[in-house]
Picture: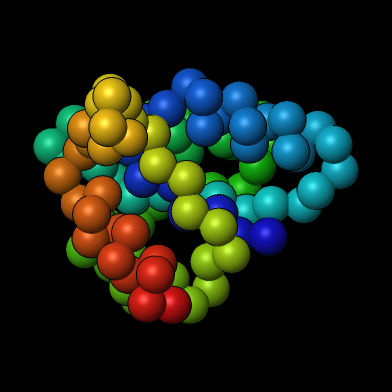
Length: 100
């Protein structure tokens, strides 16, 4: 399974670790996450867990989405109405995922 990760999230990393420890073979693709470059940290943590991880530029999501089985996004806050506050680009990732 190939999972696209957008934004650094300890919850998402915990889920990836749990899934991996329970026998599912996964590959991770993460966005760079400019300007904070959180993708580098996601990649380092995935590598430390033994998960293969590739970092792509934020604008390349549509190029790889046809190979992605699942998308995980971290969020900064969850609103009372169910909305999320997250990094720029999350809405675009969601639209691209929906298209594919």
